[in-house]
Image 1 (cartoon, rainbow, N blue to C red):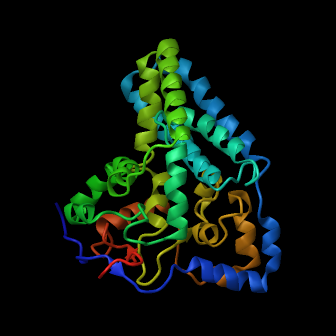
Image 2 (tube, rainbow, N blue to C red):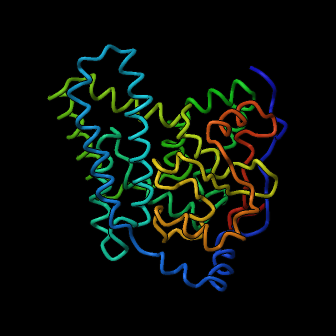
Length: 321
């Protein structure tokens, strides 16, 4: 199974997460960044175009054999579905229509969710906002791997398997470690998604639904665009818990690579995050950053200093040590 990771515990710290304090300092120097707050008026049209591209693919799937289908799902459909997942990330912050029209954001989330195949848009929001506010909290931040994951997948081969299974861990971990009762909007999300999936099977056959589901699954595992899952918060340099990536894959992922900037200013739409970086360059240029998400995946597997343990954690407030 390869080399064992060098760490046997997470990196525990007693400091607050760094983004709120840095945001305050940056705004004191550059108050004009507040002008970037708001929503992106082009966002809804980009999402609509991506959903329509996937819908136009469905009639073609029935003519593909399985090897071709898998290749198309990995290289094309999965990339679009992953981008739609990141659109749902933007919608969790109400960046399509603004905070004064939350229902519009949720409805667009239902629409963006359709090609992904499984309902995620509402559930993602209620956990993701806690990840921002309580980054690294051992109880609240479900972005953190569990101790079981860290212990089971602690070798080179184990980490590779963990990356393949990452869609399951990322999706199911919140339901296991911090279950919450489903909201009415989650049930609506489920009904809409099941109805859409049934229509896809009825009109285009089961193979078309597999195309959507397998694309979503593969693009969350061993895939270049999935590198952002690891690059964002795994500790590649001791003491640093958030990392940005400024490469070309940002073009198809709503600039999620600008992750320090996003956590510092979650009210800024992804399309404007490069402007945050430009204005406050001295706050970001010297921070550790990634140049390739593919390299991130390779280093995660091959470097014994990196693995599920390589995350900064904080004790939950009020919890005894």
